[in-house]
Image (cartoon, rainbow, N blue to C red; front, top):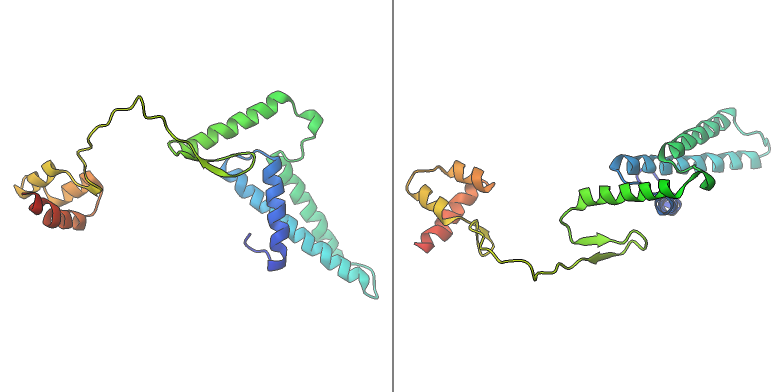
Length: 192
């Protein structure tokens, strides 16, 4: 966590892990708000430690501005917890509410990671790979590659005849014109 002292990192990390374990935050904005919450709680702990040190001195009256800061931080933390839905009492939650939260979390995860076959278990947080069954797939040749190079013989023939420019090929393949020069000199001329 940025802004935390080295001795506060474990406290901040534990807070973050606890909040992530008990909530179902799905969007980046919610996760960013959670970071703000953890940071405010770290600052709150700093203020509490300072107040405790001040009350241990000969004059046990803490500074009024520190008490005001403590109250302000508590108010901010409660607002953020309410915003994230972390203060909802268990008896107010219904099974349908929890199901909808989990469903939304799963749909958001799918949107962010569609097509990826490496996933993380939501329970234990370990990553694993989903293997795809290939029995119903057919192998097709991809004309835009030669082994692992992005290469199309017909495009380079047109370029060699002067019917298409280097910039047009680069735009079609989504590469730089330097790549076109390199492939033309090293691959296409060797294919002839």
